Length: 69
Image (cartoon, rainbow, N blue to C red; front, side, top):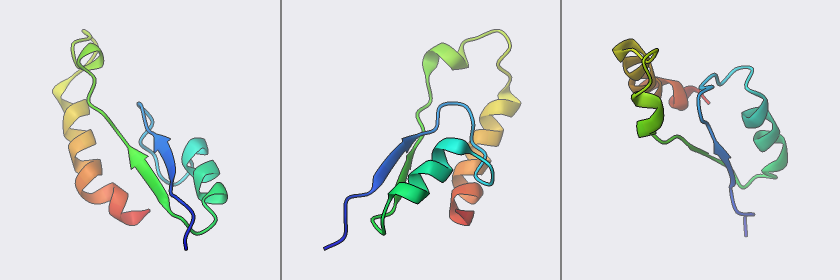
């Protein structure tokens, strides 16, 4: 039986190549896999410095980036 997956909450840093939390999860998963969780937060989306391009990047990451992990 495989161990349960290690869960990683990706809050703002969606890098997959040099992301410390994701790298640590991969080291600790012992074959059980890694479950990456990302949530759209209304508080962040409503900030003045937030731009539609940020949301577009996140959507692209969900489609393409996680498949490269």
